[in-house]
Amino acid sequence: MPPSTNNNYITMSKGTVKFFNDQKGFGFIKDNDSDNEYFVHVSGLIDEVRENDEVTFDLKEGRKGLNAVNVKVI
Image (cartoon, helix red, strand yellow):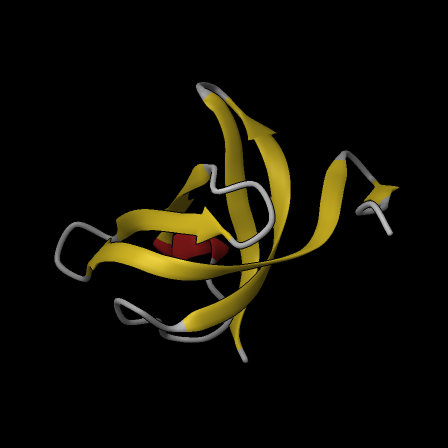
């Protein structure tokens, strides 16, 4: 089933945190289905994340493309 679209979000993707820098407050998540990588800012986190955490996330259009938001560890 393709992700649904709601309020300019593409919802409920699953992926793996590939990199996250706590000091700078950003990182990247690799989507499990497409292998695309998405930027995530600390403001888009619901849970604290670490590299290799499995997460769910929504995608929202940002200035430079899609960003991961509403990121939760599963």
